[in-house]
Length: 175
Image (cartoon, rainbow, N blue to C red):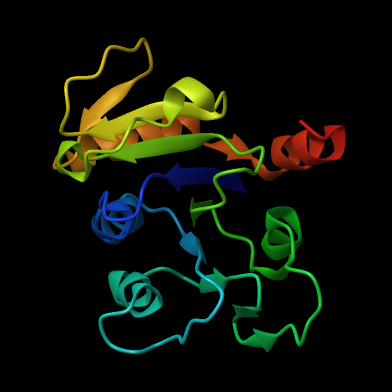
């Protein structure tokens, strides 16, 4: 199983990008699931919300998590939030798990950066960012794709995704 993270400021277009990317990857023969890190209080499967959008896009599973609960629905009732690796262990085996959020986890990520957000890029301060999807002219040696070039993003994801075993090793090493 491979894992690829997407990180970026709120409003950068992560959910929209992922909802366009999942059907393309599925059409290429991959089984794809999504883990979405949400804010403390969230509801799932309300039309228009992220979990609903990912499911409608064809993801095998959608797991949404926050500090208060995670779903395929599981109330934490004050217990600590599970780590990304613990959550991956709860999911069915697929070819690729796309992770939205989890900015601080030792996970290879693609940054989604939108010029109109007027926010700084994350990649200079995050060594786990391995590629950028943007509408802005950024000076970097990292692989780049335009926000609307979903085929190029799919190629980047397949090239950069890390194995779940490598993710576990990074988590155990405390990287």
